[in-house]
Amino acid sequence: MKHTSFSDILSKFDFDAYYQTLNDVSVHDIHTALNQKKFSLKNFIALISPGASKFLPLLLNESASVTRKRFGNVIQLFAPIYLSNECQNICTYCGFSFTNKIPRKTLTKAELAKEAEFLKKKGFEHVLLVTGEAQKSVGMEYFMNALDVFIPLFSSVAMEVQPLEETDYRLLHQRGVYSILVYQETYIRSTYAKVHPKGKKSNFEFRLECPERVCNAGMHHCGLGVLIGLDDWRLDSLLCAMHLDFLQKKYWQTRFSVSFPRIRPAEGVDIHPSVFSHKELAQLMAAYRICFPDLEITLSTRESPHIRDQILSYGVTHMSAESKTHPGGYTQGDALEQFHTDDHRTLEEIKESIRKKGLDPMMKNWFASEIY
Ligand code: SF4
Image 1 (cartoon, protein in one colour):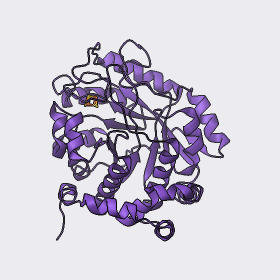
Image 2 (cartoon, protein in one colour; image 1 turned 90 degrees about the vertical axis):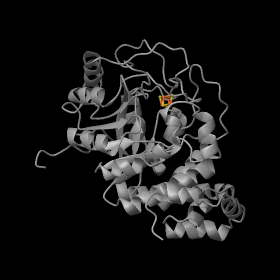
Image 3 (tube, protein in one colour; image 1 turned 135 degrees about the horizontal axis):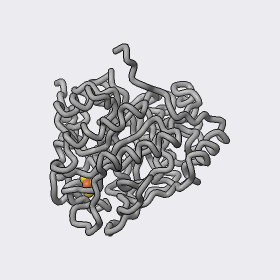
Image 4 (cartoon, protein in one colour; image 1 turned 120 degrees about the horizontal axis):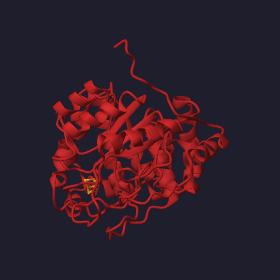
């Protein structure tokens, strides 16, 4: 039977079989996954299994080799721009959560222009626009106005905002947005319900089906991920990898990326994430790379300079730099952050650390041609 939606696949997922496969992983399974370099449930589970951690150097070498063959020596840098911290959702892990008593701010067009010009002068060509979910003040009309500021200035503008309808994505695409990031946070329905008790985001299915709407609308790129720390990172990452596999097969024209955000401290947030070590982060990144050679992998400033420097040459293709996680963060700095970042180095310092690894930091690798 042909599946038409990932939701169908997820609802049939056999959790008991997953735990059994994880328990039964053998050294032979790990080597098979390393040799095959393609996604299957068994291969991905083998590579993220506790047993595979003993082979981490081997995994990382393989991951680095596949990355250099597919992506060369380039690491593309970008900066997020927070447009608003207004949000109608309660998400227990986020500083912008509706009940969190923080000053709320949505940037005006003039304030957006100041942020944009600041980053442009620094040399950024790729930016990611981020908002909370407040339909009335930060809906499609606001986005279209904001894009008047950003599209003429930057080579590419990606968006990480609330899940939208396919028709909205088509409008954004026509306006010059080619990349949408929409992280599921967790694929475990019970956990999802617990950490999203109120607001539109509590609709699990609408979010789960969002990447398909993004791809159907003709976007060139779609970013996936889970918020590490909400549930069992191995299980959530496997489900995310299955989602990716489904999307890659169905939407072969679209590029995909994955990121591994972990829960970070934030004002008003009292959540105790499950432990996820730096070695486990490296292992997870290698598992994705080995199973998905064409996948773009992003490493954000949620991670420390030490860990970013340690793993950047093993599979990463994109990194954020000098990130501020509140609206007006680059030029005003008066509203609270969504979360605290961990890498506070300057753009030049980050570029230098990339060069020290023998890689090339790149500020621009794409722009929309007028020909089309
Ligand atoms: S995670 Fe997003 S939707 Fe949830 S409270 Fe934060 S900004 Fe709002």
